[in-house]
Image (cartoon, rainbow, N blue to C red; front, side, top):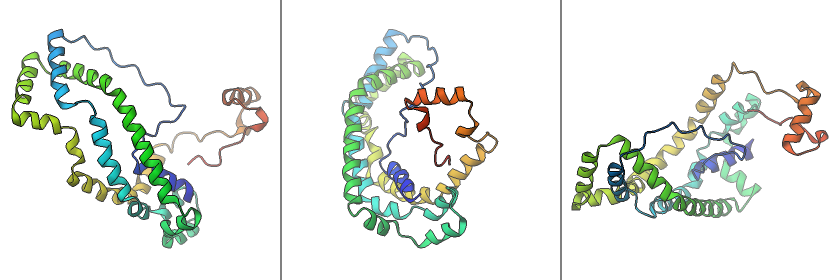
Length: 248
C-alpha cells in the first residue's frame, strides 16, 4: 500500500496525465458548421497573439521547478493512515501508520528516491514539453476555429486592434504564461497539502458513487468461453490468468 500510495502521489506531483494504454477512444466531436473564411482568418491572427510558438515549454518549465522544490514537503503531507484504511488495511493497523514518516521510510527503502524522482520527473516534463510543442499548430488551429465560432468578425477585429496596442500586446504575450507567476505557483503549492489531506474524501466519494455497481467478477465466475476470450485478449495462456490483487 505504501508503494502504491507513493506512486500515486508522485504522479500528482508531476501533473502527468493518467491515460491508460487501453484507454477507450474519445467520443466523436460534435459537428460544427464551418466558420466564415474571413472570420476564421481573423481568429487565427487573434489566437496567434495569445499562443505564440513555444508557449507550453514556457509554462512547463517554471511548473516543474516549483513542483520539484517542494516534493519532500508535499510527500510528508500524504495522509497515509486514511489512505491505507480506505485501501483495505485493518483500522487498527492503519492507525499505527499515523506516526510513520514517509521520507524516513523511503530513506531506508530507497535512499536515492528523491534524486530518482527528480530526474524522472524532469525528464518526463521535458518530454511532455517537446510533445506539446509539436502539437501547438493543431491546438492553435483548433482554438482559432473555436474563437471563430464564438466571436463575430467585427469582435475579432476589435480584439486584434487591442492586441496591436502596447497594453494589448503585453496582455496577449503573457496571457498563457501568467499562470506560472510565483504568486500563482505559491498558491498551488499551499493547496497541495490540503488536497492530500482531502484525498480520503475524494476516494470515499468515488466509492460511494459506485456502491450500487456490481463488483468485478473473479475468474471462477467466468464461463470457460469467457476465460478463453480473456486469455486471448491479454495474449497469455489461459493457465496464467490470475485475479487482480486489489480492485480498490
